[in-house]
Length: 125
Image (cartoon, rainbow, N blue to C red; front, side):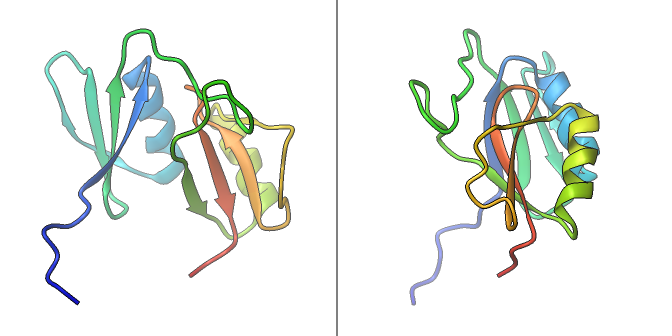
């Protein structure tokens, strides 16, 4: 194996409102703000491995999961102990459930306030 060039520092999500999404993921994952641009067009959250960076994009088009036309480009899998309780808590924070649940005993697919799909999961490496 060769030496890596670097290490993963952040996962970035486009969104229309960085404040709303930063608040959602801060509460959902217990993250703290690590960095923000003066206009708050970019907000980075830290506290769970790589940072989660939220980037304001004009004319943002949310993904339409599971079928297009704007398909998801990535999603977060969030490890939880119990799916029903975690899904209820995420929904109380502003997430919405999706009708299509391909493996509801292992993953629950939800949408964050900007429409990004994310999964709550009991599956561990």
